Length: 114
Length: 113
Image (tube, rainbow over all chains, first blue to last red; front, side, top):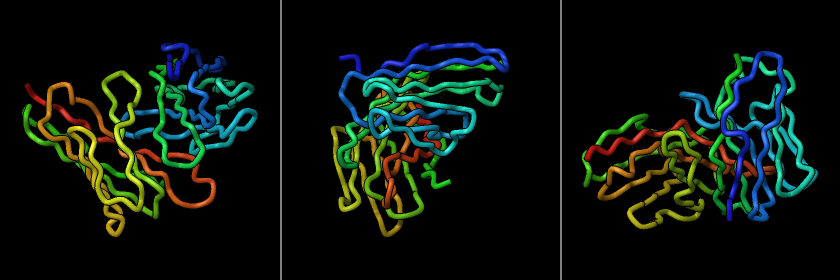
């Protein structure tokens, strides 16, 4: 049981390049989330999904797009990377039926945009 | 932003001592959760307390919730060097569409052997 797996773990991009971060979970969780973590800022929600085929904006969605074509996968895309998107990105999931469940987090993707 | 606020930002204690961290939030909640993050790793869920609960225990962890003061505390008893990590509170606010957790900025705990 792998839990939540994020790929890649590290990436360096040049300004203007695009990339996709993949999150996969094998727990049959309904809800999935993408957060970014910056020093002194805590975790901020980028986008989330409450089920296959659904997505919604979080607190800081600009510059990112997401897709949830399969229940187990949640993709985060950067269309034109900017230095301000240098961050550590975390994916999380939870059961979602009701609200009393903790999140399971992936180990993160450290992205540097130069 | 409706982030929770942890206090203190950093805490350094000797092994064997107790560590207390506090969290304050802004409006009514469904539940409040605590997470641990070791350096360079993802967050790990520690404990969840519902809005109608006042205290919960899990091993060496004790969490209290005071909804009248909109605050929570996490107590780690008999701390160990392995408890060194950052601790985050996260709140699920009440209301329509409250699917998401809002995280605080964390308390960095150092336990000195």
